[in-house]
Length: 182
Ligand code: HEC
Ligand code: HEC
Image (cartoon, rainbow, N blue to C red; front, side):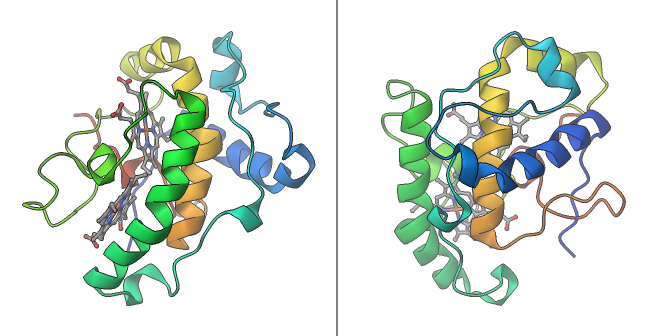
């Protein structure tokens, strides 16, 4: 089972993010992004400035992720995930993300950890509804929108995971990459 539940307010955003992604064909050439739910209205900045990709532009793992060997996973990461994410993150901020590499997601000790995710090097995310989570959204409105609208749908598609389902608590979420804050 690959179940990583997502806090409630993030669920709202995740659901809306899914819809936004389906509409991406119409908005592919613009930087306009549909609203992503409750939290977005708290954030004055509504646009992460990154072009919305069409589904067909996103690479997909050659087989369901669970059926790939560790070597095949690493090869897909190197051949497809990394180049895509390098371009995406550079579009978000070319200075901050000039050198996106495996360690950007997996952390500096990725070899010792055998690339296991989530990565303890990424900031831990608090459950929605908590003051800490609200603060995170307020402090990083553009980054949160970028994560919701671009990083999450792309990574989910690449890994051939299902969108997050609020009812079952299954599917791809922020917690595939970020640790859960205590
Ligand atoms: C944009 C973030 C990102 C980048 C960049 C990235 N990875 Fe990954 N990687 C992931 C995610 C997410 C998973 C899947 C986690 C899961 O299965 O829950 C993963 C899984 C893996 C796995 C399988 C780990 C396991 O426990 O099954 C390997 C091996 C791997 N990555 C290697 C690499 C290598 C090598 C690079 C650089 C060429 C790289 N990754 C770049 C996000 C990334
Ligand atoms: C594919 C892996 C991946 C997924 C999924 C993901 N993130 Fe991220 N996140 C990253 C990476 C990589 C960074 C940049 C780390 C760095 O600056 O080196 C980051 C950075 C952030 C930051 C900036 C933190 C800071 O202090 O600057 C926030 C906030 C954040 N993510 C929130 C989220 C949220 C919320 C979600 C789910 C909607 C999410 N992320 C999903 C990989 C991911």
